[in-house]
Length: 142
Image (cartoon, rainbow, N blue to C red; front, side, top):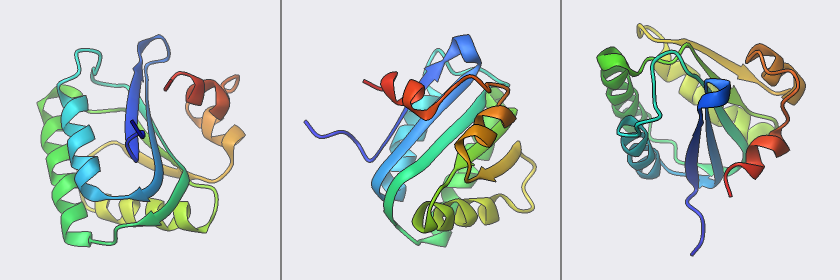
């Protein structure tokens, strides 16, 4: 069975949620995975979210649908799942374009700190995990 274009893993030992996108980033899959996350017993307030966009090759550019997803996230966050930070790792032009679109969708919303980073070492440093690597996290998705 092929893997979903988006999946996540809660890593409580690091107070981190690792979200990984690959291939075509579609909003319907994002809705489904966020719904799964919102019901996950390991999901807790204050976790940092590391959203890995490094394998994204194409994005669905439906800004109204993206705003609807963000509204759902804000609703869940207000009910107690608010992360302390959302960090989008976006090396390369397509991942960066996706990260910028998501960043724009958070504008004007009362939510967590949202950052976009193109450098892996800097991303993990900002998360307070300077010893971590992307391959460490990817190995935990298996």
